[in-house]
Length: 321
Image (cartoon, rainbow, N blue to C red; front, side):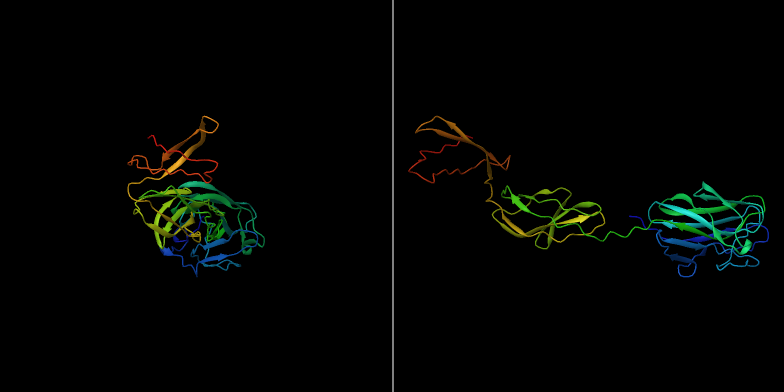
């Protein structure tokens, strides 16, 4: 997302019969800077050059113009942009001589960006028109635009510099709501939370977890081990929301609740089953149980029973750590 912010100051260096303009003269947005829409094109920002002259040419409607007939004319202004952005820069000019004008060189931040050719304008000096645009890259912060006339005295009159740039609408659309928030593998002090990823029209950034109205964690992943909890406690109204790169927040997910286990008693997961030793009426069923809390004291209660003792009777349960 790019936004062009104008904080422009004008310094005009004039030779010959030019009347000097006050150094550091500000361009006022409502008076000297005009933003207008052009159909099927990006918005155009028009910066009048505010150049004083002895007499305005016919057809000029701005705040003064630069007399390109004076040798080594230089017009300079500063434009401030919030972020680096490509622009197209053009001049509006009038030129009434029968021979081609020498034109002007465009210098952006001390680097020559291009040269403006100035053919004779229709209706002579009263026929204001635009040069072709020169593409340039403005850096974040202040940028100096310098229009330099050639030494010869047959250039056109300049009335303003124009900047054409893409203005992207600010991102105000929130991501989708994360779905299927779930809790698993509880211990006395932690719980594993997971959810389906959200989506955004531009760029997803991450997720924020809540217990009630309090945010408790943020992550860019779609799962999170929430620790520092209290043993034997039920946590209610647990939700997650998504946020994008512009800071837009989704609605919170559907709330869930979970409970932590008693202190010092780790949870366990059956990771292998249906392993039989023997056959017929007597056999052994082996199952591998893995703790969900490595490093803690391994105290585990195992209970096995039969849903139909007439068919299957449990003769005993042994645990071999």
